[in-house]
Image (cartoon, rainbow over all chains, first blue to last red; front, side, top):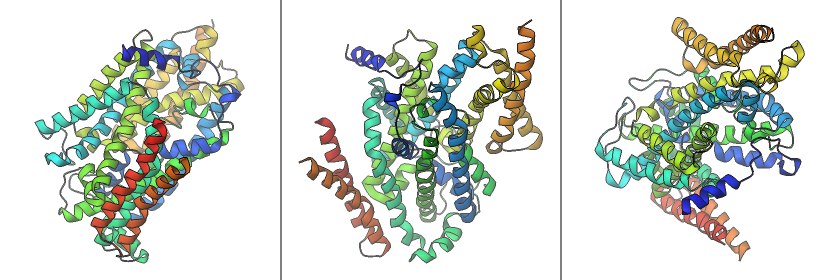
Length: 464
Length: 54
């Protein structure tokens, strides 16, 4: 009864899902700055920073690669996503429905929901490493794919159950808690890293770069890990949120902005979360490696606990939870778009169960860099479709918003573009050996080209 | 009362970050820093949760 009441309350929330956001609800630059800083300082940062260390990133490569990569990400938000967001002021899903048709949008929602489940799963696993500290359970190693044992599964299931239960109750309270926690989390990252610097040999600030090169980002990958260069770091920083900027998922957020320049507010997230937090968590992991003689066990919880005590462990739990919770909720919403009659809490429960099952497998955390790159790549073609449909088609005489105009449930040209560009990316990777981190750039241009050609052919045949 | 609670929150944030600089300059130990961070955490979240509850 209580759940149904809360569910009904959620359904009453006015989110302008099928209409433009009215001017009275537009928000200024500052509110986006805070939102992006909070959203991008999350549980994933405890994993990504250390993985750069594990992949043997060099100090200068990391500092410059992140600086430039994050800059390109900010430009992508500002010049690709935000201009369409403030002109159309509708959600990504509604815009996709107008271009691709309802059925193809449903397919997109299904893939999106599945990706959200895996992302939330990795965050539950991160939280579980901190919850497991008092029980001293054996944790997975960097090269592990399967659960380390029954105790690990029990803790993950417990964390997953609590997270899912809270997600079924709604998003509002978690969002408020995330907003409160965000500035504290950033400072915990920073404080923990500063406090361990002397243990790494930094006695004054002038020593930092030398120690960074010799002991933190040494340029030598750990056993079984591939080597990351400047280009890996640049492209990862640029494309790790590809689904959001180039993939246009943030149309749903930036449609509330007064001006397109709100896209630049993403710098708050990029340079706090994806710069300071990644560097800080990398420093903590380097100390852990030094103290454990390069033990391959990968445990954000114990690493943060050893650097910042109970506060560090709490930070990992809260960071993981505040990321997992809204992600499960978003996955639920994406699925609910496919099954509009199903109750939100029931769908959230299903999503939470899939997420918890995924969280049991450490491969999800250990391969997070690859997963995040794959996530962006799979959803990117839809962003290219929207970009071309919005800016180019009206200028070259091809019909925009075809599904809405012709009352289609399935735009074949968009489907060909989605699958065709992903197949092309796969073939590029297979034939040239290009890693997944780099595929987004050629993939976007291929998707754009395929969409122009297939739309031209499809609309010509279709209009006969 | 609200001003006081806000002040306590700000002190909480300062206690979270400032002692780490003390560790760096060897003014306090790492263990003391961990206690200060925990106190800072409680001071940051405590008033915020009270605010939200009201």
